[in-house]
Amino acid sequence: MKKLLVILLLLLVFPQSVLAHTGLESSSPSTDETLQNPVTEITMKFNTELQPLSTFDVTVNGSDKVPIDKVTVSGATLKGILKEPLTKGTYTVNWKILGEDGHIVEKSYSFRVDAKIPETTTHGQPAPKETPAAAAAAPDAAQSKQAPQESVSPSGIAAVVGVLFLIILGAVLMKRRNS
Image (cartoon, one colour):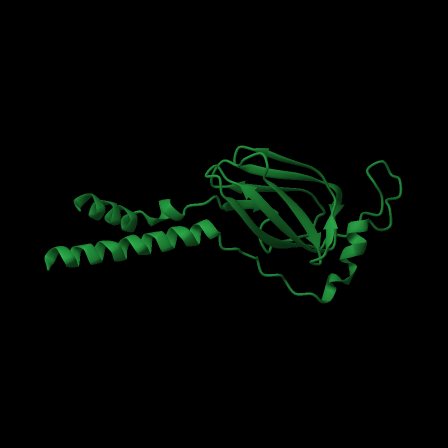
């Protein structure tokens, strides 16, 4: 009985260890940031090591996918190099990671780019008039910011239910013992 009480007390004192999952600590571009220069890469840093299957995609105006050249995982960092710089538009990064705890976490965040397409390249040659990402972003002017989307992990719900069950079981056993 004493062991059960100790376990219950530990669960109450340290509940974050029961429900702890990998989470986003920082990103570049960051959530709701508005940038004035084109974006060529996206970097996200998490609070624990990531597994190699972690990935992300980027959409413009909530629908059209932006081509990503390469996604890499290094420790707690997830990084993607874009095929073309992101110019004017609202972009959503939809990330899906596998943390070191073995749980899959899926969330998203948005940022805005107000960069114009350069008129010439660094070699003095005319730049393309419009990239596919910029063309897809054109109808974005009247749209408002998207709120980050979050999902609840089934294992997190199971952990909470389990803790509540143990608390109730402990209370019932204590009451029977005192009777």
